[in-house]
View 1 (cartoon, one colour):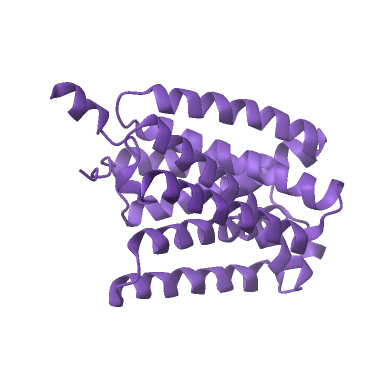
View 2 (cartoon, one colour):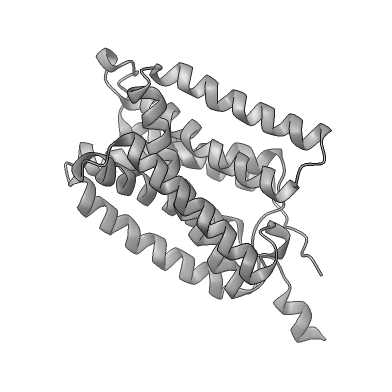
Length: 252
């Protein structure tokens, strides 16, 4: 009985307002941090992706082996997915020439397929089921695809559609508000709405990150990527420790 209970301990956080705030900070940090390595240090997208991929794989491995929810470890893993997602998306859309539209379409397909396979194998894509290594693998693969999609999608709205960073941020913010209203006033699947919101926070963070560090003549504030990343990291740490997070309840 104790073994069964131990296996059902969730290692992902309960979804609250603080969760979404920290998630937006993390996705914005992913953009500024990814750009800091690939652009400011001039390592390029491919080398930066390799560096962040190693961090991501190591973080996921430790996260899966952990026997309980550790907020700092969880959010480190999330930040790892956002940084590698940033440089991987930029490498695919820019260096490989796929483009923002093509990249967004391919990555959206990957997210949908990941969710469909996850549901087919386990019967649910709810975070309440993330309590075993197999389900947790699906969880992190889906997050990885969604974080990469978010960068391409943010660039598509801000650059390809020529909306600019602030208007694009407003569009994604409006999408999050609509998702919340659907959650609040309709019976639409909570798991589906969670993943819609999770995906939307990534392009929101991407365009906010670009707004902070891109040059003035490109519509940004031209802030140091390292300074912006450091401030965002401090905000994440402060929120984690001022507002303790509990693990999500598991489905039995």
